[in-house]
Length: 237
Image (cartoon, rainbow, N blue to C red; front, side):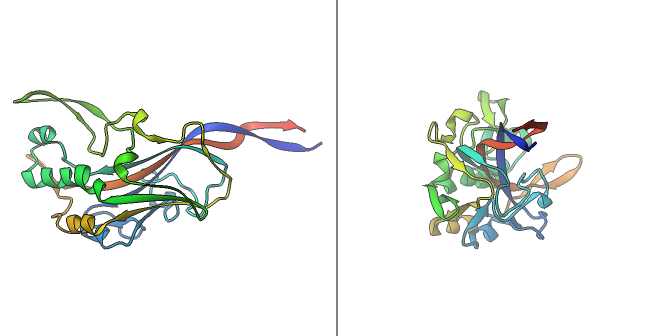
């Protein structure tokens, strides 16, 4: 009697993150002490250079070489975060104008001067700018200031609504198991010029506890379905 593994489809999000900040560990790829170091990179790779050894808060890729299961890709998103990009929030959190300026630069200006390329094996399946593939998720809420009640959301490009993500709809991209996948983020010379002018990610001051070093990040996500063995289940062929 042959016993075969019963493959089942389950929703899955693949995420991969680079970190920018004074105290980020430098032993792993994709960790930068400042935006200037990001600007000096020829490209920022995703999905093929990091694995969970960097911490599962930053990626859930177990093998940086290829995905170990078939993956049906439905949507793509990129999230650029920089603390204190919202002026209403900055009034509450005590940020200075320099932090607000840097945050707005990363959130609203840089994404006009860079682009993303997604490759499956050596086949380029997407070339676009970050503002056209927003992440579609993040926290949101309201804050009260002297101008009234203002809606705010986590500091990122795009409003946190999943419907805003770039989707393949019915034309999903089927990625067979053990297939190399990579995405690269490229900055134009204008973007590099802007990034090199940034003073750094900065600190957030607390009245009674001193300053905390902040971090920025760029995270790419692939949403879809992976095909895995049904847990604890076999069937007889």
